[in-house]
Image (cartoon, rainbow, N blue to C red; front, side, top):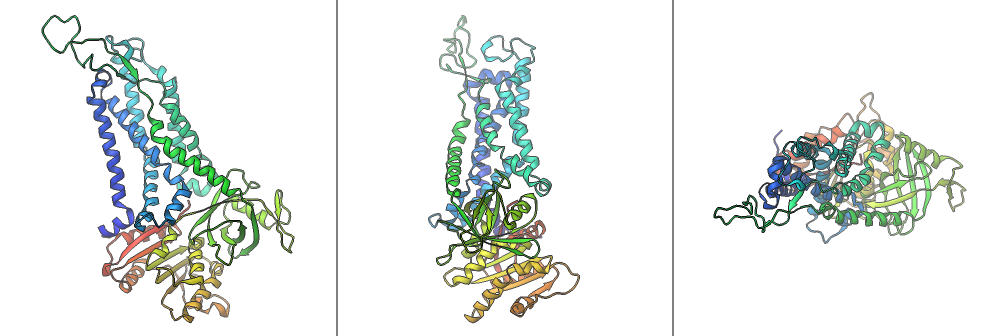
Length: 544
């Protein structure tokens, strides 16, 4: 499949990736040459060689990426950037979280730089022992030549370095798809070790094993001793003095770390507001809808919230997309959650049970009690950008329809004031009952557009992936959906070609939330060269 440079650039944010790679390359090279040719490191380089340059250059790159990796964790800041009209063009707002996410994957999933850093320091330990400097004893770690300086492994830099590598290893392995699916709790708790990681990182730089020369002017590198009797201008005026480096890691991470801590405090205060459950509705195929009310809560279609229920887990939090957003006339908001995993099973049991510990009584006629829980958010997601295109394609797989439910509800209110002029909606489900989650919403929007003489505004395609038997949505009110229900799977190349022919020379936003296979196929097709000059800009919605 041929790749279109124009489409690939639009989807992958090539300029930002090149900028990030350039920054890492320049920083690595400048630090490498500084320790290789810098006069203040002349004697240290003479002893340690390339191990010194590689260890310090890789450390500089790690400092940069440990700084950048904190940025996507500031969810509230990213939500503000997504909603800000002052950040122009809107494509910058769209690609900023994606590019920062690239930084996250690069630094934590690629272990090359930590491996280089650790290997270089192991070589330095060997060089300190083998190339012991009799002339400058203060530059050494070993007490005499031939002493293996493994004692440095039990010093502050050694112990903290081993601990940092161990934490990175745990975070790397726990982020695998298998562990996330089998035990999300392991993934969640392991990734919260980043707090320990940064605490240890700030301590790791202490120790002062590597030293630089402070009096280069009085003692130029390689100068002749003061007892030199021959004529020369390069005569030492003083003995060299060496001093340990001042730690610089905190200079890199202090700013983003303070920003993250401030944002966490803001989110904690914001999430402490009381949440009132308005209703709990069981839907087919193990899906539960929860309608809530919280004072001062506002959100945009496509955003998501994070729930924490102390009765289930004191620390564990889970994201859920808003399927109903507050409006000017309705203050409630809602989510649809699929019961899948220990946390959701326990949470739904508490919602549907008659008596729950630590509950808040609902102040309505029906005297139901619900578990006390907290709502953090809302936070931004790629689905918010559906309205920023004239033409958008929304592809959902099963419960992945939730990000687009909020979009459809917004169009039910007033579709005319949005930039969006045509929406293609494709929903693939394994079971027929899944379509009933939002069947009323789809039929209502379809009828509304027909009444307002815009039947071409919304193109609905429903696919039932199980091909056992042809089924239809029961009920006269669902006739519009039954006519659009197909058995099988979509033919993605033909679908995108048809959309491209109908929207020549336009930018089409492609939004996907579903299984990995669908997402991968659409991503590849969007990066390939399509006909009619249409550019498909791919956006993926994913929480795990």
